Length: 521
Ligand code: C2O
Ligand code: CU
Image 1 (cartoon, protein in one colour):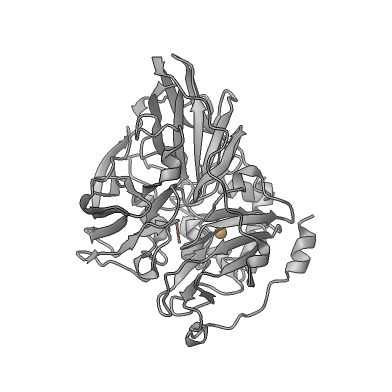
Image 2 (cartoon, helix red, strand yellow):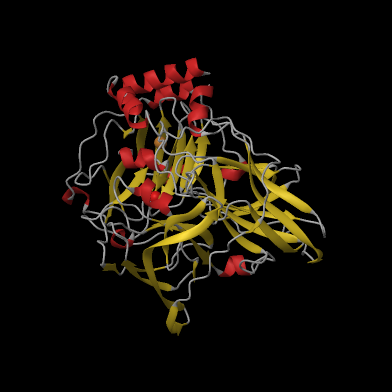
């Protein structure tokens, strides 16, 4: 195994610019490097003694309730704090309106959201609304930095289906660290179609957010912010909503879990230890056309799934992350923890449970985007922390997209590391994975998707109507360390006819997708 590791590190080092990478790895982590040994298993070994923290619902000021929706004003402050997470001692954490993580924001389709975000942290940061369709100025990416002591006030109208979205910082080069310290939260969107279905929806009771994040702590309980390997920091303890060894007291026969992979590098294959089936009802961008019964759902960093689980009175069930098939070598799997088996959460059912209604047979019809509507096809090759051969440059626009257009993006991970792909401002549909139709869990709206090495994905997306020739949106790998290292590009969405007003960087070369297709088999 050591041999494998070295070979892959060498290969990666060579591709990433000579043996410098190796030397850096050795010198940075030579002493005090808390190496996480993988594969690890905590199956059956977690105590589950802490009640699961439920992030509070943010309470907006609501004015001008009109027929189309309300005007919701959320005041949020990012601040430093201290949290009791592990026995070793209090942990210095960051949070929004609290010590660790942030409140859950909630709004309905048609509402206008106004955020008043104050940065009381010692560092400049930003707050990005992951999965949201909004003007680029409101996106909270690296172009909307908020200095310490400053505030930022974006506003937009919610114009997309009910979904489980989230928010996190996006400062260029510092995203992994800022998320790791604790800035992240959920943003739940509601709409009439979702409300019309007989689904669990009592927040924190039978509709429960689960933010999965792996962390390591030192002997005094401090977060270990080092030990980055190829894919970024890996932790040996999985926190759910910031709680270690969490237990959820279940009071309904059916519970809806809104699961977010809020980790930087680790993926999870979420299922139940006793093998009970679960029903997936939604992916990143909203409800699936019909419920899908699954044993496991794999979530790479940034992805979400809503799942329903049924329990009998008095029983217990452990939510577990199983080893994942990421299509990578064993050595690489060990640097990303994908062979680990980790217990996440104990669900403990009460002696009497609120009965569950019958499972809906259909959810919401999915408008399939048609390939023939797509005017433009773009290729994106991800390799060695670059996209199409380039590192992120805040001053470079890589792509110009026409508002309202439908496009196909062919995305290809052409080397052995795990990567995924996230696009701001749109929800896309996956047409094919390695030339094959996607599995049912990828059949709905997505904004982040895993890219198995050497298997091109074809994504179809329709862009919105918010335009700017100046302020870009991002696309990037959502393994946060890769993103920080520059695996990111920028696109603007412009009004028809304005395409030539943008100074767009010429492509270095087009990825050879013909040969990628062959690799896929
Ligand atoms: Cu969740 Cu550009 O990120
Ligand atoms: Cu990556």
